[in-house]
Structure formats: C-alpha cells, structure tokens
Amino acid sequence: MTTDELLQFLDKVKWFGLRKLYWIFRRRVEWSAEALINAGYIYPTFQQSLIKRPISRKLFEIYNGDCDGHNLNLSQYFLGFGLIHYAFIRNLKPRQVLCVGSRQGFIPAILALACKDNGMGQVDFVDAGYDQDNHEKHWSGIGFWKKTDPAKHFACIGIGDHIKTFVMTTKEYADKFPQKRYQYIYIDGDHSYEGVKLDYSLFWPRLDTNGFMSFHDITEHGYLDKGVFGVYKFWEEVSKKHAISFPIPQSAGLGMLQKV
Image (cartoon, rainbow, N blue to C red; front, top):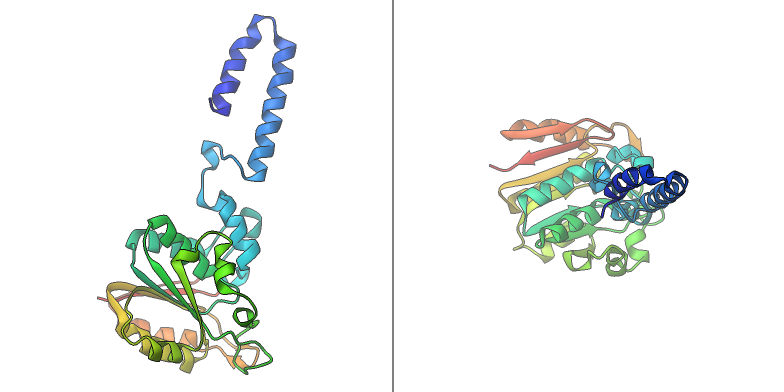
C-alpha cells in the first residue's frame, strides 16, 4: 500500500468515531514519509526524477562537478550538462565511449553510469593528471588522478566495470591504442586552441558514422591560470565544417558535432 492509499484509507476510517486517533496516526505517517523522502529512501510519484536519486547526491559529493562550468544546481541536485550526456548515452547505446579530461570524475562517472544503466558500453577516460606544480597548462587540474586509485574512486557508485582510466596525454593514449573506435567522444582536456585542435585531429577519424563528439567550454574567453582559452575559436571553425552541429550556450558552453 502506498502512502497516498494509506492516507485515503484513514480518511474513511475517521468517520467511525476515531477522529483523534486518526489525526495522531496521520501526522505520524506524514512525518515518517517526509523524513524518508528527505533522506532519499523513497520517492512519491510526483518526485520521481533522475536528479532526485541518491546517486545524484553522490555524483556531487564524490566527483565534484563544476557548477559554473556544467550548469549545475547543488541545492536541487540538478546535473546540468551531465543530463545531456546521460541522455545521449542512454539513447545511442554506444559500445565504446571516450572521455578526455575531468578534474575529479564528474562527467566520466555520468557517462559510465549511463552505460551501466544501458547494460552495455565501456568508457575510456584519459587525463594527464597535471596540476599547477608540474605543468604550466594544467587548466585548473589538481593532479587528482596521480594521487588516487581511479578504480576504487569509480567503484564508489558501482560503475567500475564500465570505465577504465588512463593517466597519460591524449597523444600518448592515441599512439598506444591506434585501433580503438568510438560512438561518443567528450573533449574537456587541454583548453588551448592548439590543444583542442590536436584532440579533434586525433579522435575525429576514430569516431564512427552517426557518432557524436562534444566539446566543453565553447563560450569561455580569456585566461585560465597560465593558459589562454581557445576552445571557442576552434568551435567557431570546426562547427562550420559539419552539417550537424549545435551549441548549448549556458554556463561555459557545450558544443556537439555529429559525424555523417
């Protein structure tokens, strides 16, 4: 019996001379239900949503999404651009996904979660693990992937079987695995014009027909630490070369290209 059905039953019972007992019991039920909802254990029909799941809370707490960069809302557990990537993976059902760059794993975790929910798919996550102490173009990196065990990190939400982490540059990765192909690629590594252009040249030929390549930070200008943003410039050039492309300008911007 659902909470609503129980309350409807109590509405009928109260007319049989049990009014005081009815209100005491009803308040107890309402308080208990509210506590369970707030704790994330149950979800009334009107609150059923991906962003209300306990897993969404873990994505914020463990994988540290960038609110300004990914259009997130912490108070609502709104996953912003993460919902777009999740929807693409759920619908495309790719066998192989490539993710380039993430400070602490927010987007690669969502990609792997979508693969898990599909019951198929593998994410190859590539990050050089730079921080401000060992590379001039660390792009706000914190060296996280050289300081932690990626397998244990992604196992926190049970997605370890759907993601592999490679702590190396994209050039090193491309040279090491020259035969790999993908149906979905996310680029969020070196944000310079030269860096994003290199990632495109390395992996666009490895994207299958009808697959998608997405770019983060297509609206960002100016400096980040010691680097100059160049993704916006590259996006202006590359989006004109493809028949199917669309930008999402919120926050730092997200651009999507489809290979046809």
